[in-house]
Each structure stands twice: as C-alpha cells, then as structure tokens.
Image (cartoon, rainbow, N blue to C red; front, side, top):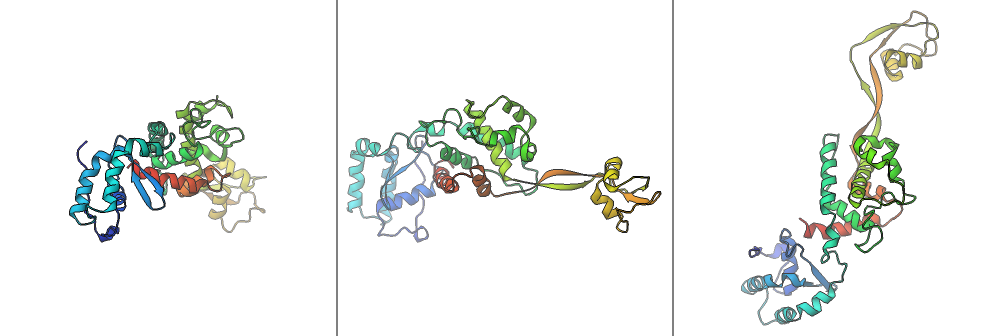
Length: 325
C-alpha cells in the first residue's frame, strides 16, 4: 500500500501547538477514514481522552511524525515524541495484549457476514426505491444491528441466527411468513416460500437469517395505509333495484361505498328508491406503502424489548463508519 496522504491540519479541526501527538493522530485517522491498514484500522483508548494507535499502523507513523514536527505542531523533543518511539518498541507485547480477542476492530470474524448484509440491503433498496418517500438503508447500519443482536462470534446464535429473527417467542418470523400486518408489500413470494419450512427456535442458514432480518427491518420502516384507487375516472350510471344498498352495489358494480357517497352527495343511502339513478366510478380499496419511517424509528420497532437497543446500535454504527467507509 502506498503512503497515506497527510491532511493539512489547522485550527478548524482544533489542532494547535499544545496538542499531543496522539490528539493529532486521532484527527488524522478521522479525516482519512477511507484508509484501512491490513483490512482494519483501530486505536486503543488507554484512559479518557488518551488514544494509542493499533500496532498494525506503526509503519505509517514516521511520515506523520515528520509532518507534525515540520509544522511545529509538536516539537521533536517532547515527551509525546519519546512515548511514540517507546511505543514502537513495545508494540508487539503491550498494545497487542490490549486488544482483546473478540474486539471487532481486530477479529475478522466480526465481519464475516458483510457480503450477505450488503446483498440483502441492496436488493431491498432496489426493490422499494420507487415507493413514496423512500430513503436508502446503509448496509453498515444493519451490520451495527447484527453486532447488537449477537455480541460477538463466540456468542450463541452467531452461526445460526445472527439477526435473531426466528427466536422462540419472536413474532418476526410469523409476520413475514404469514403475510401479517401487510408484510407482503415488502416481502416477495420467493422469500416467503423459503420461510415456510422454518420453525421458531430452529436452526437457520445464518445468511438467510440476515436476509429475513433485513426484510423485517424494512417492514417495520414501511408506513402502510388503506388507499382508495380509482380504476377508471369515467362516470357511469345505475338504476336502483329492489333491495339494493350501497354495500351490495359496491360489490356488484366494482366500486366502493366511498365513491358512491361522493358521486351522489344528495342521495340518502338508507332511503334508496327503485329506478333512482346513481352515479359511480370503478374503484377499489387497497393497502399500499405511503411513506417510510426513519431508520432510527424502524430499528427501535425491530427490537421493542430492549429500551437501550437503538442507543447501542448507534454506538456501533459510529465505530463502523470510520473503519468501513
């Protein structure tokens, strides 16, 4: 990998002469969030406000140090410079020990479902993009949800139900499988058919569980309403017969009670007369997606049992977007 581009640091990002090397380094990492070392970058918080860089990026520290010194942001003789040199010597022992085994910034198993998440999110984004008020879902948000649902590769469920849909007592599987709450507007027939053989608490293909979890999240985001649809704007006429009612005529004529009322404002539905002329238009009611909730709102609806769920997802997401631009 080539040398990283060192940003021009100035007062707008709060970098002044009094800052330590590590303050400058943190700003540099955040500004250059598209650079990844060994597939992942990271830093270790050793105390409040004090950050040490991950050992895998030490080879890139010399040009940054030279830049900092050249710009008089940090004199070469300061204690921070000495700390930098010392930290290189003890990197393998001290810093690597500080990275716990299941840290998502160092253990690639935390990222094993990225492709499955991207594929599922991209499919639903494409399928629903034409609906009113749609806003694209970021795949990294689902990654943060997955980390929240199952806390690490060694946790129960990681290799079976990584999005935790289909757990015993969880309603999500039944909603998607049985067309409840108008989920058919989000879930296509192919996915629903694949869900038919899944039982609550059973073993899943983890990638399919992710797909179902993404489907349930989109379902929770969709705002569904009963909408009147005019099939043909042309006005037609009907002569009332014995025992006709607006309810029976709506079914017989292929229209709705609402249209019969609006097209015949002077007619009393409870006092129809034989041969009385009624106007109507072909119409019907249907449920359709009329808008979309925020992904924050949908996420909290995804897991209503945990009041801190959204807060935890947000925290993971902030970490993820830095290292997975």
